[in-house]
Image (cartoon, rainbow over all chains, first blue to last red; front, side, top):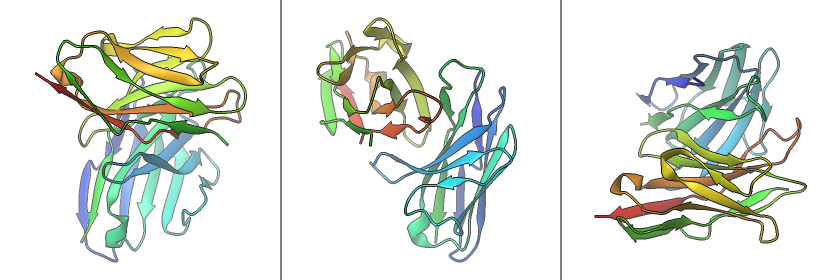
Length: 117
Length: 115
């Protein structure tokens, strides 16, 4: 149980285009999902907290108009990188919080590698 | 503010030898502590957590960790390392309570187990 999927696993796009990444909790309901960014050989940096049915909460320094987050259902959150540029190339990982689990554990998706040419 | 430190960027160990990955933390109150492992181009896999109770926590794949409140440490250990344990390991902390849902990660420690 507690499986989180991400789609796509890898995407290459041209500079200036927008890319949407999906994060799904497959076997549990997640009122909260988290989006992280990871640069090569670095730790995960929290970008935003996505709450079902409400606006996402962004961490300091993260542009909300560039990284659009939608959490329309209890099993799906999407991250859209708008007008992507090469510096947005990174590994994006989502996690979902399982309300049914004691202490609200987070479960992580497999990640999406974004390359902007 | 909460923080996590993993003082070693890389740990090298021979297969069959004990493995230790260090983690120290700073958080208000009693922390929730986690260890995750990441293989190349993959997401994080949960290894173990400390919430309360016994200071020695046993987790997946033969790993364990000891919570030491006085030293604010939560070192990850495995008695006998395998080549397949080679990966990137992250320690994470979260303050307790509903308001403390955010995980803060350490910088990660790369483990290389040599045959």
